[in-house]
Length: 577
Image (cartoon, rainbow, N blue to C red; front, side, top):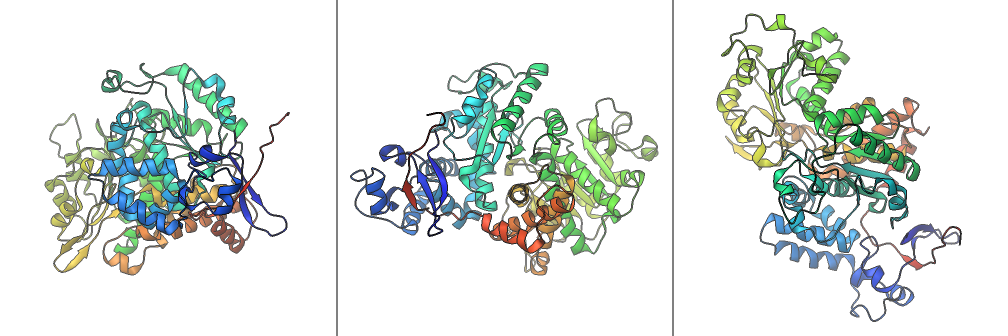
């Protein structure tokens, strides 16, 4: 049953919520609960008289109270549990707290702490958020969607839990990721929380630890595979299209082959994208754009080694390839500058294990003739570093310490300012630390990491590594696609977003080695990304025909600010009654 609706008073022009529930039910609704901030009029009209203490709080005084409680928590996991509880009590209060303390709380609600939380989710679960679709209830998907209490759904973040961060198959315990991503859509992008829906496709798990854990709350069966899995995905997509025809769908943390297949199969059928592939690629590209500006270099002047050719690595490589081609290089010329390394070593043409975009990223076998190799039958990372002379080193492997002192020192030989991007999450999975890069490059290396690291003082200068967080791209891209009513998400929209992000980095920030904007500006960055995406959609014939200024004004208006709305009692009319 819907609990409220968005309304505008035709006489006064006031925005308000028409509320259909009363009393304790209202206090238990996280979208609507104001707790001590309900006004006297609302308490009387909504059945709250006598259920609350007489003192009436402001949002500001409530913030002081909950921040005090947050600071009393002894460790990050307890802080995550506390913030999750606050989100389940009052969304406006949670988001105002998050916006005011974003840099402090981002590592709690998302990487790295969210990984720790997902590992223990069945043990720390308090209340459920979002929707869980299973092989057993997929036939009832329409009833499930129609039973949601939200007035509308415009944004869905969905996972099947098979590849959660760098932690692998966590089954439906991976729901912490969609919940966290929705929080970032709201806090960073300004998407209204009442139109966002986190979802998990619980199709089982192949993780023995979960299957043997008596407290695990997901399906205790091996993962659904093959035609049965694809049939469930098809029914899920059709259900979304029937019930939420204008919604944006974000695929999140699916396994590599599944992710590419779903993206290719559905990107033309539904407004959708894959954040692990396209979002990571676009954010990394923005960082590289800034690095080129700092180095006064072109993409074609660099040589790239990318280690870990899953979704993120492939997405990054394809974005680099696109920029090389934009600079005028042919497919063959672009191929000679990108060295992709995965479990089997350097990707070479004719490898039967490769398909899809990875085939475009292979090296010709003739190109490596004459390389000095440790093992003639295998070209490993050390071989590639020694022979390819990279100036850009990118890791998405979840192998801590992979970029050793020797590898960093070798990379530093071939560029005055080498670029090192150690992007694996959480922090203890990073391929190297920023300090290791700066030690190897005398403080000249340009560094981006997946999780946050503290700045470092180097010979009287403050050096900073940028956190290459997809939060720079996906909230703004989602907001822009929804506001401009795009019919699909294109590579051009991501490229426009990358340029908007990089343009936000100031000369002062570049002097510190920052490749991405500071997190305190994330809402402004998201608005700029949204506008760039809307312009690209319009010019491609896929979005609303609004001039640039009008589009920018609508995006600014669309960004929800965490605050308590005015409530008026209403009566929900049931169709057919």
